[in-house]
Picture 1: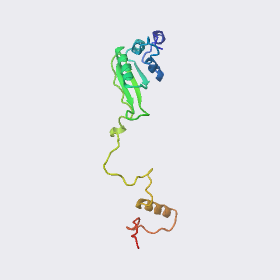
Picture 2: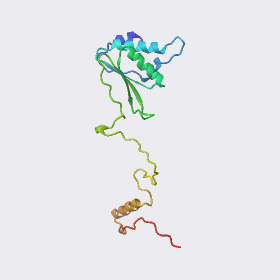
Picture 3: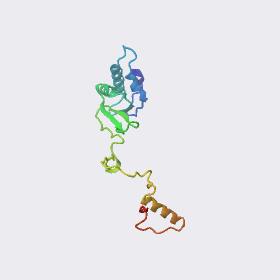
Picture 4: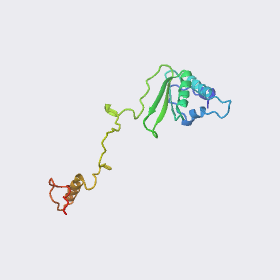
Length: 181
C-alpha cells in the first residue's frame, strides 16, 4: 500500500472505495528514523487523488490515537488536493464513536451528518437533566416501588383479573397505619 502502481491500474471512476481501518493508521506509524508519517500520508493521498475521477468521493473510517494524528491525516489529505472533512458518529459516546474522513475530488460536496447528533423528525437530542432535588424512589425497569400505593393498586388489579376476591380501592389504600402503643 502506498505505491502508485497499485491504484493507478484501477482508475476508480466514482466507485465506492473501501480500505482497511488500520491501513491509514499504519501510514502514521514510524518504525525507523527514516520513516516519515507526513510524507507517507501525502504520498498515499496524492496517489489516491490521481486515481479517482472528477466528482468521485472516498470515505475512510479511522480510529485515531489522538487529536494530533487526526490533524495530521486531514492536513495531508487536503494538501494532496482533496476537499471534504471529518464526520463523527455518536460524538458523545466513548465506545460507539466512529471517525469518517470524507474526501471529494473536484467540487466539494456537502458532508453527511453523523449519526447520534440529531434525532429524527426534528426532535431535540435528549440529554440528562440535572436537578438539585433527589429522587426518592427510582422505578426500575418500569416497575413500581414495592409497598407503594401504585404497587398495591397494580397488585389488586392483577388479582381481580385472576378472578380473586379483592377489597375495593379507597382513599386509604396504601396509607400507613398509625402506630398504637
